[in-house]
Amino acid sequence: MARVTESAREARREQILAAALACFAGRGYHATTMADVAAEAGVSKGTPYLYFSSKESLFLALYQDWDCGLADRIQAAVEAPDLQASNSPRNVLRALILAVGAHVEGNSEACRVLMEASLMAADQPELAGVVQSSQAGYEQSLAELVRAGVAAGEWPTNTDPAVEAQLISSTLYGLMARWHLAPRSFSWQTIADALADAGQH
Image (cartoon, rainbow, N blue to C red; front, side, top):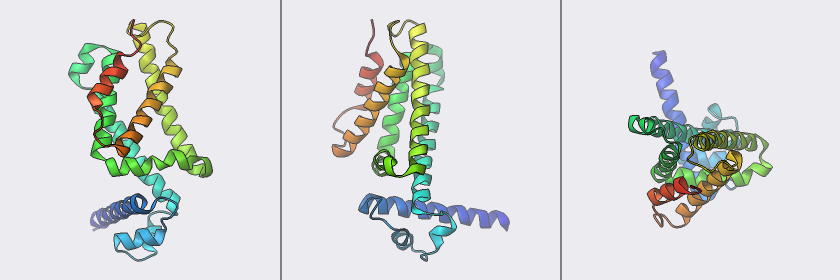
């Protein structure tokens, strides 16, 4: 019985998250209230608070779900046997960028809504911490990848891995924004090839 109860609770939590996503997408973060989320989910006004202490914590849950999904997709992409066999950091970067593109395409509404996070971070301390930590983690992984590429002779020896990681990360963020303004206006494959091949000798 406890297992059924936990399953039902998880299903209700997902229902509330889906409702929040729809509300944030339609109204924007600041205009959305917890009452709006409850109405969208078809539950009583107090129900969302049984799962999330505030609108901010609900938004954070959406952000973290997105982030975990992206991390899982990237990990699966870079651990592909043929990619591992190539032993090429540039090929890993190419696969990583394609994984980001696939995640954006497959979760376009969530991506569009959650890009608000970086804009809201300045006046939302809890959110700022999560966003900054997530970004720092991705940039550290990118820097390690570039550093391995320098050691393998795939990037020039004077490449600064931290700066290169920031450039790649910022480019990907800009491309996400462009995708939502003009869907399918570019090819993720073309972008992946261009970024992975940039800066070669």
